[in-house]
Amino acid sequence: MKKVLLCLLGILLVVIENSITNYIDLFGVSFNIVIVYMTIIALYTDELEVGIIGAIIGIVKDITIGGIFGVNALILFAVSYGISHLKDKIYKESRITIFALVFITSLFDSMVNIATVSLVYNSYGIMNLILKGVLIIPLVNGILSILLYSISKKSILKLKED
Image 1 (cartoon, one colour):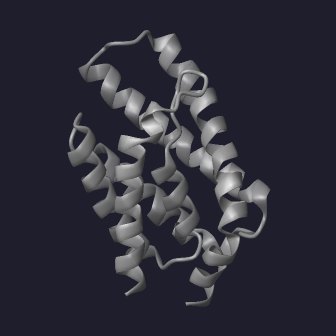
Image 2 (image 1 turned 180 degrees about the vertical axis):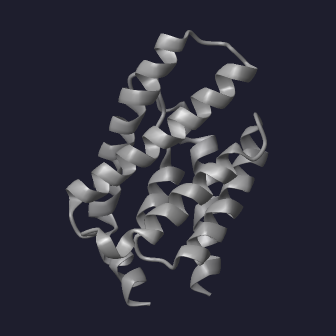
């Protein structure tokens, strides 16, 4: 039941991201709630479970936003599986740890998207893509992760108990 609820919450976040947060512009970028969500739940969930949840949410995200099909599914699967694999070696209750993990996952997400999108669409300059993808997007997502983690810390710690 927990897996189904986590998956449905992720799909709801995809809908919220596509309909609301993509129109909130901070320094020329919008934040990625889904990558923050997958990073945080990967710290408290089994590797295979969270990998499958990440792949499902990624496929839903690919279907809803268009672009190159499968890129977001691959990114979310790799991020969630990788962090869940390392969860026993990471101190999870620190805000600095959450910020660092979301920064790294956002950087990975940006680099994969830059590599795939620049080859196909070639719509922005490479320096603009690198500035936004390497610096601005990971910082914005990292700050958002600290806020979301602080707000929902009790609910997240219940994942640890289940």
